[in-house]
Length: 517
Image (cartoon, rainbow, N blue to C red; front, side, top):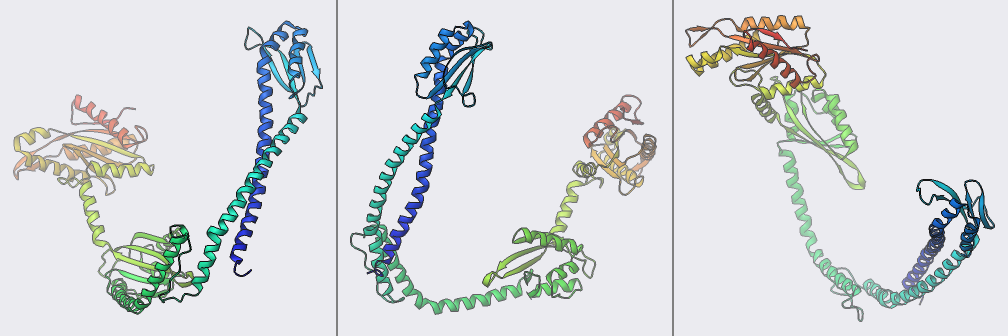
């Protein structure tokens, strides 16, 4: 009998034990809550009493009327929650009654009847703390007793219902389930009156599972064959993949690699290594940095990725790859590293070409505004001081109008050529737009900057041949600004140089001017 109903007994014991623990905690919390509510209620009542008599007490303190003050105190003492009360003016005690305790008394200021901010006295109320606490304990005990009665009734009802509705039907189902052999056509019987309940639905679900298990036995051999075929296909996919693939232990010991890995290493005149991280350090430019980056990413996550440059191949060609390292887990949570290396050299070349096209003026081959702003913002971000010259061509429009746009293009190309020939490789030559150019060099003193600007001005003013026969000459108005004297960013320097350049334009043109401070 004990074995038959052991589940029921254990369930009942668990319910009782759980209920006792939860009940003790809940009762203690409930008692404290009710107790505190009653104490707080008494405190609020004292506050309300003070507000009720505050006006009268203020008048008594203002007039120093001891009879009125005593009347207020006597009225307050009629409340069970007030043990004692004292009303005093600034100079003396006007009225006092009860066992006044200065340590527990609650003092309240009394304000002037007509001047709100002037204090004319004080009223101190000593709470009947013992009585308040005793009353709070009585209320809390009564509430707890009622709660225990209600909880016990509900718990008993729940245990009885749980036995007949859950425990007994479940014990019967358990006994039946032990008699069923997996793969047979035997099924469970739905308990009486449980056809539409959760237990009934569970019984139906188990029967469905038994039916599914019966069909699974017949499918097992077919599944094994399919798994074997899938493994063969994955082996083919791994061996013939265009991307290099490597499998290694979590310590980096290489276990497996495909033919594409060998081909990639052959391009670098390298052989395979036993250790993945050693191979990466030897195959990549700045290999130690790449290894550290991959290790850091793997320590933070199960995936590491990045675009890095390999050593140049035997022809000197640059090779860029995207490397992806993922962590996978085998049996007993053993960790492995899966490495995929994809050649993205052509993609990098396309991006470089597009970036160059987007930042270069097609006519002159100089930087355009987009490229210039990118380069200058980089220099300012690195806190490099620079000298900027804004150049506006003089006499360009007449040549363009007389000889045509092709001749104008020749002049613009000539200007770009002259600027490059008279500047260093790292200096920036920019076609700012139309017939305006910008030159940016390292920081110079004012005298050195003006000397360089004069040199460029002289070079640009030299005659040149257009349309294969016509010799023409142009002039140039140049404004010069330096950082940080005229500004700490690109926009400020352009504005300063532009003002200097237009100052030249307004006067004689074809000259050089230094920006004003």
